[in-house]
Image 1 (cartoon, rainbow, N blue to C red):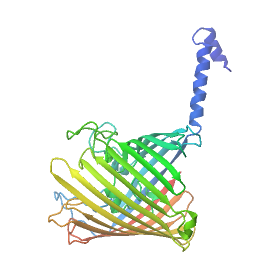
Image 2 (cartoon, helix red, strand yellow; image 1 turned 135 degrees about the horizontal axis):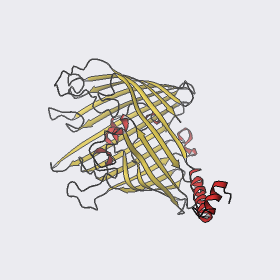
Image 3 (cartoon, rainbow, N blue to C red; image 1 turned 90 degrees about the vertical axis):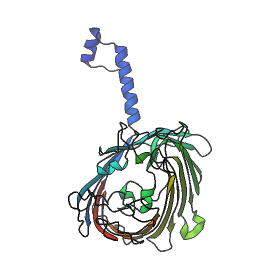
Image 4 (cartoon, helix red, strand yellow; image 1 turned 30 degrees about the vertical axis):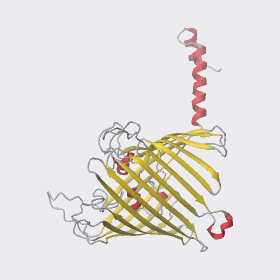
Length: 401
């Protein structure tokens, strides 16, 4: 043990003991050892969005200019201006190859998009703090077969083609299906890699839709007289085409379901998801497809709301730096799911999106996107409930670190 002169003087005066100094140094080394395997990553996500046309919202009109079915880019505070979307910081110690490996992950998000995770840390109302804990879990591996992995805490949902992190999606704007899906859960998730062509996961959580309402980060509470044992359950299966499938090798078929208590409206819900990414014999061209179905039951109204969404994706790499991503998605939902409906017709929305991604700077995502939304059932849900169409042009710039 090495001590400086000041420490030795304090020990001589009886202020500290050399034993306590040794213990402090040992604890410090343990902390440094634990932190040495922790990584820091994240991104800063910005955008500029222009909505074609004019929304005539006079004083006292009570109409908020939104684009139904949009998750992040269709609100009044985002349209027709420059935006900081979100800043994400990730601290992670991933699992290693050890049989009893352990680690953790903590995703912290700051900015307007963080409010999509609408439970607040103090259990207050809908989140308007521009801060949220997106994920925070302890990861563990048990030596069962190929290794049984566990996550305990707050983790991302097991369903969906697209994710919260916009730079990881083929398009900046999210699909209608994303708007139907849960975002995260608080519970326990187990995952098992059966073989190179199959992986399975199953879990239990406090709620199916943690992010929709207040209730604290854990999102639990018996607001409607539910039993304390009321929980949500989830599972998924991932099938990957092996090399023997020729040009289809590496294609993925994904299925997942989340069902159970929703804590608030919807009180109980079931979300079924099936998605696939498909390789093609044409170099640079890949296809994708996604289907979401949600059946939500509302407490106290003896009513339910059903909706489904279909999406098709095409990605083509012109060069290593230039990519084009196209998406066409369709939504069919019960009345009053995404916008106030006067009649009894189901909401029917069609979205067409084209995104061009060109890598100009290292670590920077630079892309432009044009999107057209259209109402198919004769409703006028756009522009002060007067138009059947909405057009937006977006520039999205993200720095990843």
